[in-house]
Image (cartoon, rainbow, N blue to C red; front, side):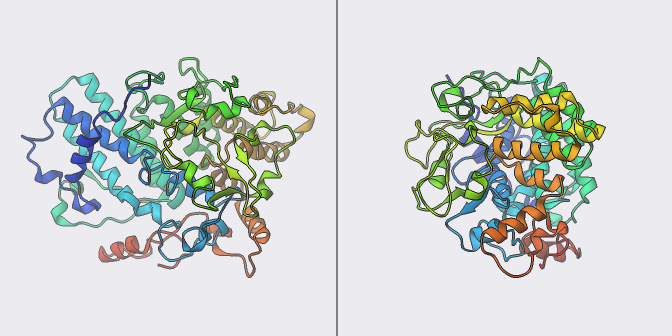
Amino acid sequence: MKKILFFNIIAAATLMLFTGCELTSEEYSKISSDLYPTTERDAQDMVTAAYVALGNNDYSGAFCCATGFHLLSDAATDQFVCGWGGANWYPLVTGDLNNEDGSRNPRRLWSDENRISRIGRMELAIDRIKGIAMDETLKNRYIAELECGQGFLAFLLWDLYGGIVIADLETLKKPEDEKILPRKTSDETVAYIESKLKSTFNILPKTIPYGNANYGRFTEGLVHTILLKLYMQTKQWAKAETEGRELMKPEYGYALVTDKGGRESAYANIFSDANEGNSETIWAVNELRDFSSHNWGAHVSDWWGDGYRMRREFLNTFEAGDTRNGTQLIVDDGRAMGIQPLKYEMGNADNLEAIYTDWIVYRYADVLTLLAEAIVKKNNSVTPEAIDLLNQVRTRAGLAVYAAADLPDVNTFIDKLLWERAHELWFEGCRRQDLIRNDRYRSTMVQKRLELGESGPVTPATEEQYHLFPLPSSAINEFRKGGFANQQNPGYGD
């Protein structure tokens, strides 16, 4: 039976009442430390609040399928189109990111749910937990979970926006000073992410089996996956290779799903309710009836009319016989807008707005293909091992293996690998990173605009310096109040 991770959502929500909406409005200093936090349970509740921030429940959480990081990132690629259009979706779908603030536009994730301030809240929680008299092993684990949460959220923000605001503890403890801080540089932010994640080594468990009471908590496997992705995006191929090889060690227990499990393919079975916690899942949001659910079905079906769609042009890039575009995953309802990307099984849902199948954030197929890329780029040659790693994912999809003759040089290998990842990881938040890392984002988005009938000059987002999303005007105005100019990403208006 699935165990509950968010064992005290109410307590966590109560804790959040004591935290301000902005970085400078943190209220911990106004709570007597003689009253809170003082117990092991208090520490538990503070850590739980961090998981709520990085979850996916209805319209909240970092991985909310309506406004979360993965969805909005993939929307700005060749995979995605949306029938709702308008100011919400047009900028993302067309790559025209230089737009005014709106509800689901590229600027939102910087400030939505006070994401920057949440990193500071975790720092304050770490400081408070250090002073609690409790079991030291458990205390260290709780602190490591919070540091993982900081590194995780900082990575998600850095990927889309570059350098972020990182408040020091002294500033966080003096909210009455209303001190406004500038953004760190991209390199400083990367160093912060790396430091926070590495501080958790040998403290968090390697992995947590499904059914364990702690399933859904952060693990060392998750930490190494985030580091792998960080090193790939910063083109540190040797470090990325080390992280990928670490995740292949038997103590993590990761393996590709190969059992069909009653669905039409092993691939479809990854996203089935009966196969939650499968060997391929590195970390997923634990969706629990009466506590947490996602509304993927409502967004991709006809529930609200034309919503999220896989573009027909992208669907046409799949090879014949590829099981990753099977009828239980992608449904053609005849609409010109595109194909329904169902992906997640919805049989356990009360309705399409409340689906309880766990939301997978990272999985092993992602790791294997990134490792293959890292090996080839580090060596600047195609190796038998890299081909084998790529083929492991490819053959699971029912496709013929690549022979060495099919991949004669590095460029050919990368081209084939990127399409393999696109077909394997569609709508899982990987495509934009892949295209940017391999200098293909501009050409891909130019082609998408042509296919969408967009006219006029190439838009800012298709130029190299516009790979980052713009910051919201509210953030720019706040920086100005603090005396900091030029905080917007290059090329965007305030």
